[in-house]
Image (cartoon, rainbow, N blue to C red):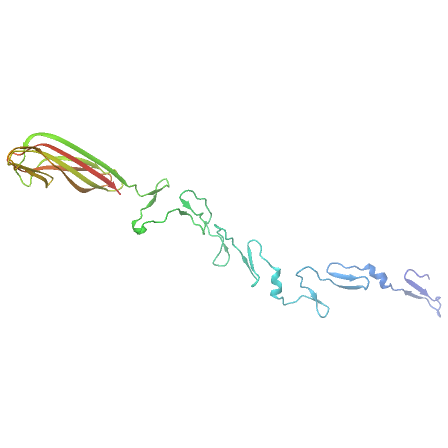
Length: 314
């Protein structure tokens, strides 16, 4: 019998002294080099102690309990945990309450909002636009697209007195029609063979002169101020008299109370009145010349007239 590595043979093999084979156990110093520590474990080769190895990273809550076992505390103090958090882009964090929330930008034109259900919300159709002349805003909820207007500078109510703005077939904004003011006139100076002034009173028509007044505005009625002037020359023998008028109004009467004839006695009279002409219409405005109260052989030999019209579209 020969002892191999790690064994020992004692005895001679007889009944009185039999063989005794025994193994020699390895020493700790021989075994310890065969052991090492992997993840989550620690090994001390001097003492041969194997233990759990908690991570040293910040925030690790694993520790050893009072009984030497591994322990993760069940109650975490909020005040201890909150310093571990902060807010990055697009987020808000309140370290006093621990509330983490979305943070919409306050930049002008941002359409992101918090909806009624507490979620993030962008309204439909909230795309922004670039405005040109006459417009302002960008179409967002905070800066809606609008017409750029001035402040109403008048003491009257804008809703009652303001004009309108309209869109034509080409999509161009238009205002109420422009105001207009125009003028027309006619003048006649006609000589006559000496004609006896009729004795009638209040008078009889001698002739009618006409001024054609056109409303140039196709949209609005015209307010017209009409002004007529009339001048008649009378030849008045001694003791005679004569009168002329416009329409039914006697405008001038003259009498010769002297002993000699008066030639070409005259004065120019004026009458002013108003007319209305429909949009795009016209009016033949008459000037009717009347004669009256002719006595003592009074005659007329000239009739001069002016007819003027001031036309306003407002």
